[in-house]
Image (cartoon, rainbow, N blue to C red; front, side):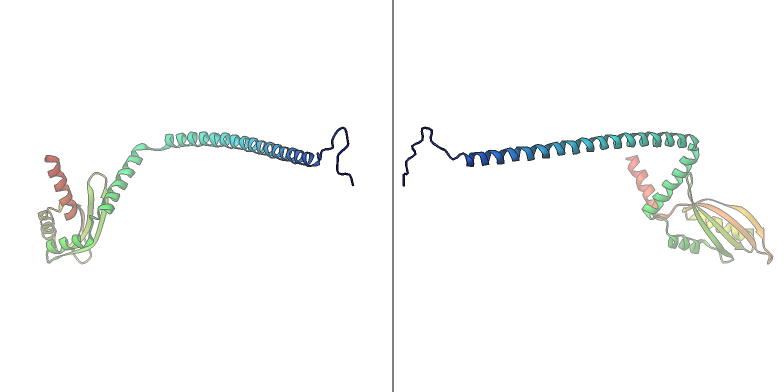
Amino acid sequence: MIRTNLATRPFYNERAVHFWLLVAAALVVVATIFNVTRVLRYSRSDTELASQARRDEERANELRQQAARLRGTLDMKQIDLASDDARQANLLIDRRTFSWTELFNRFEMTLPDDVRITAVRPKIDARLGIVIGIVVVARGVEDVSKFIENLEGTRAFTRVGAVEEHFDDAGFLVSTLNANYVPERLAAEQASDTGAARR
């Protein structure tokens, strides 16, 4: 068997080279297809995002115009009053200054023997703070006057006065009183604030 290559042009095995070139070409084609699909997808996504942004901007403009129209129909004085009331209420809630126990203890100390309390209604006034409505039943005007004096003597109640008075069927005087009320803790806080301001 002759092992020598007698050809004038030697034969080389080119199949391996062709195979690897084909693999490389296939990889290039796959990468190109992948890149094209990515570009198309991102382009479509970009278009959708631009459309969404345009719609959102239009919606925001509509809402701004609607808010401007609503602001035009609102009564600003009413809003200011409501916001003052809310601020006062929040202040009381946050500080926990209103104590029913403290209020009733003050009533117990100041109530004359011939006077009965039948109703107590606290409310928040934006200008006056805590206003207490008190309905009392007494034998006469002197007893109610004594109760008013006792309340004012505690200094926790100011501007105490009767807003309505009438006699019931049994002959007792029914008086509705209003009073500004400053709870002890709130009075202490106000005093410390005043002291700090003076310094």
